[in-house]
Image 1 (cartoon, chains in turn cyan, purple):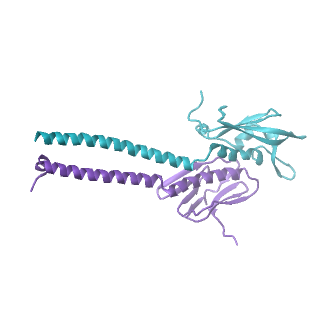
Image 2 (image 1 turned 60 degrees about the horizontal axis):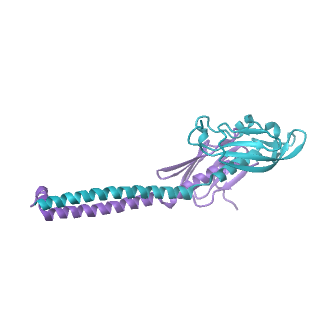
Image 3 (image 1 turned 180 degrees about the vertical axis):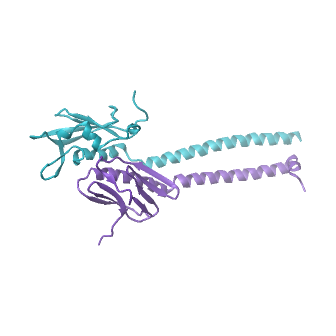
Amino acid sequence: MSDDVFDVAGKTIFWGIVIFVVSIIIIAFTIMISSYKDRITGVPGELKADLISQRFTNTADCFAYQDPVTKRTHAGVIDLSKFNDEQMAHCYKTPEEEGFRTFNFGLHLVDTGQETKTNNYFQVKTYRFTKEVMVWDGSEMKKDVLEIFVQESLTRLPT
Amino acid sequence: MATSSSLLKDKRGTSIILMIFEVVFIISVGLILFQVTSVLGDADSIKQVRAAEDLSMMANTLAASPGNALVEYPGNMSLYTFVLASNSVVVINQNERVTREFILPEDFAVDTENGFVEKTERICLNKEGRIIKLQRCPDVG
């Protein structure tokens, strides 16, 4: 009788341990599959940022020069009179509160020295692109290089 | 007939109960693992996430394109329902929703009234002037 009691107690402890270990295995398995799914569906941040940044030089809603007479937009030509934070707010504005959680950009024209940035850009440079552009300053067209600094999703505001 | 308490006192009864428990436990673990794998590793749900990612990137790209454009999303999308909101695209499959956001220039708008496409094979993103809309692709030819 006493052996039976110990046998049952031993098996109960054994199954307690098994249930605990199997639970850990199931949780680990779930996390593993979930992270695998994230990995195969994830898109590199550089690609997303590059696609967004195309607008800076290609559309008159951002900084591209638009001929006032013909209304033709010159892709790759930056209108210096529009290269400011106000125009950037029309072009790409992240939500005021949580906007730091998405892409933000800092733009710099190397030769001209002019800069602009999006509303939640805090100089956290995740990566940088460069584009050769033309700059229209109202009287002449000059060659320049546009540096685009990308601040990828931040988890919290920098102090 | 043996009652449950007399079954527990009996060694043979105890081992039968433990054996039943072992079998039920092993089947349960197998079912849980199968369920986890089929829900998380389902090819349709992966395709759903990718469609949402791609469509949000397409909206960002269309905002950077001069003129009008009509872009067809490749693949058969008949399993999903698409909703294009003012700053996001939602892809729905049964009860699972995947949302991806995009940011358009201020003067752009999304045609949200017609931005609902349900279980159609071919879907297109259409940019007309400064309006972006999601629609069934028109038949060509």
